[in-house]
Every structure is written in structure tokens, then in C-alpha cells.
Image 1 (cartoon, rainbow, N blue to C red):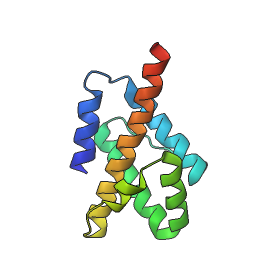
Image 2 (spheres, rainbow, N blue to C red):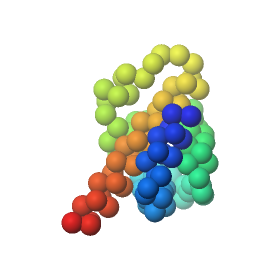
Image 3 (tube, rainbow, N blue to C red):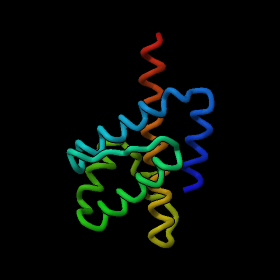
Length: 117
């Protein structure tokens, strides 16, 4: 979890305005793949990462197929998923959360960067 939080904090240092857009992007992808009324009422990177990891664990335990659909929708690279270190389930979801946060932030960053041009 620390890796994902640190990544977000570093990315948002000079671009704090992107946090709200990031939450919106995550909610949009999760709603389209998992559940229509899913929300992430986070106000800090730590809260967002914690909520995201909890939801991922819940999805995987109840409907693993939806987790696959979600990862496809977000466009997390298969090579990155395969490269997740083997270990306990908690570590797996920490690393998966990081991959999702990283990819979703990239999408938001690129979209806002292109809009400025």
C-alpha cells in the first residue's frame, strides 16, 4: 500500500488538481466494469488506496470474472499483472492496487496534458 500512496503523493505534489479527476476516472471504470453505484469518497491518496484495495479484494472474492473485466477496462498490462510477486493475498492486492493507481493516473495526466495544447 505504501508504494501506491507514495507514487500518488509524488505525482500530485505539483498537480493536486488531478486528484479529483483521478477519483472520477477510477469511479467511472469501476462503475462500467463492476457496479453502477460504486463510489470512492476519498480526500487523500491514502484513503483512495485503502478504499481501492478493499474493493478489489471484495470483487475478487465474489466475482473474479469482474476483476478481469476491470483490469481489461483500465488497461493494466498483462505483463505487469504476471510480474506481480508471488506471495500472500494481501501483498498481491497491494501490488495490483499500485498497478491500477499508476495506470489510472497516467490516463488522467495524459488527458489533461493533451487538453492544454
